[in-house]
Image: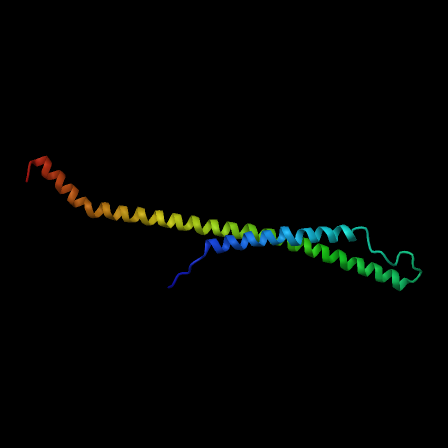
Length: 130
């Protein structure tokens, strides 16, 4: 079985760059679009034509849907940023813990290997052998 390597710096960089793009590009554009179309569309209200009025309603509904989709995209982007951070932290923690476990295992094995020699040295000291 072969393992795989995870670039913690790469995962963190992805999260940072995604957050920057969301903050610098998407959030401000979404806010501007939402503010512009929040009050409705600028045509059809005074028209006697049912087709024009329906077109205005349809257009507004599509704009509203696009803004809601963008809100969902922004939310999901924030979730991805958080997940990237948590994944990097979890891998780093796992690496640290596995390293500590390995040190503990090696220390225990080393102790077991040296235990007979330690016992023999104590025995010799206690009984004045040498």
